[in-house]
Amino acid sequence: MGILTVITWLPVAGLVVILLLPRGHVALAKGVALTAAGGALVVSWALLGSFDRSSSEPQFTEQTTWIPELGMTYSLGVDGLSYPMVLLTTLLTVVALIASLKVDRNQKAYFAWMLLLEFSILGVFVSRDWFLFYVFWEIALVPMFFLIGIWGGPRKERATLTFFMYTLGGSIFMLLGIFAV
Image 1 (cartoon, rainbow, N blue to C red):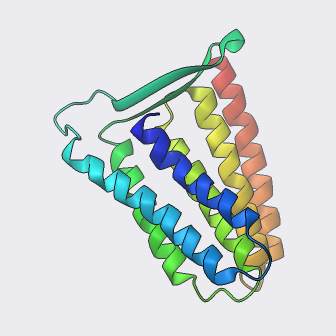
Image 2 (image 1 turned 135 degrees about the vertical axis):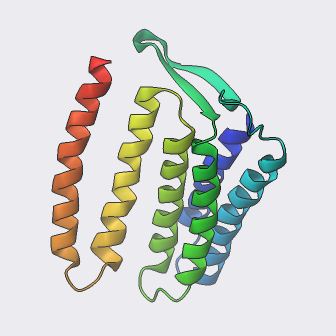
């Protein structure tokens, strides 16, 4: 298992643990979320010393055949543009989780959605296959939809509907573009 897979899938491990927790274990869910996101943060920042900033080639690459009939692979790597985004994503997720420790309703679900969002955003930045990129992009829309719809502000219903309509339209054109390439 490659290091980018570890960074990307650590939030999913935390998500699974949170989902398996019995009702009422909110403090433990918060701790698991912070541990999983913090683990991804530590591992991603630990790569900084090994990252060759003078190279424009993808680094820490890993590739596995995913759907051979369609020529799709599970292909990950980072370059000078995506690696800083991975660092920023892991840092901001931890900051967002700390800032939201006082969420007062559906706390377990909130932290689970946040970890799914981190996973999908990391996947967007590390994927090197167009279809894999698209899958991660679409996965990111699900937690954003629920985070806005459940924990959003006073006009969250309208914001959720607007978000859904725009992202649906954009996603269709993105998928058509991927198939055209």
